Amino acid sequence: MNLNLTRIQHVGIPVADLVRSEAFYNRLGFTNVMSSTFQHEGGQGKVAMMKQGDIIIEIYQMPDPALNEIRSRKDGHIDHVAFDVEDIEATFELLKKEGFNIIEESPVFLAFWQRGCKYFNITGPEGERLEFNQIL
Image (cartoon, rainbow, N blue to C red; front, side):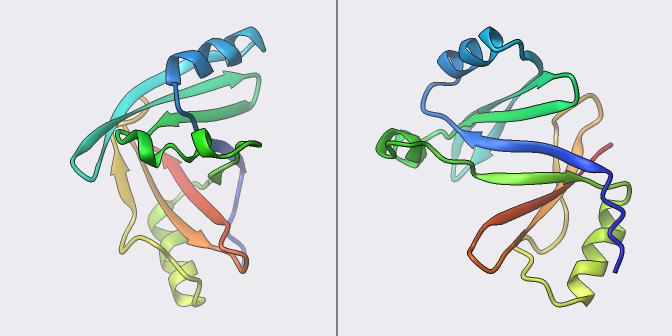
C-alpha cells in the first residue's frame, strides 16, 4: 500500500493560552502563518499555525477550559501528527478499504489556510491519532 505521503504536515499541540503560546513560539523563530477559529461542542476554539522553515506546529485552544488538558498535565502533550497528502478522498478510501480505524465518517472541511483544507484521522494501536490533511 502506497499512501503517497509527502511530509509531516504539522504537529498539533493543545494549549491553555493561545496568546502566551504564540509569543513563546515567536521567540523560537516561528511565525504565525494562519489563524482561525473552529467550532467544538457549541463553543468556539482558536488555532494558530506557527511555521519556521518547513516545520509547522499547530497550537490550539479549546473553547471549554476543562478541555485544555495541558493545564492538568505537568509535562504537556502532543495531540496528533498530521501528514500532507495529495488526494484526501483517495487516501480516505484506501485506508477505509484496508480496514484502518478511521475516526471521521468522511474527510472534514475546515476554513483554514487560503482555500481551506480537508482532513481525517485514524487511531494507531496505542490510541495515537494520525491525521491525513490536504490543503486545498
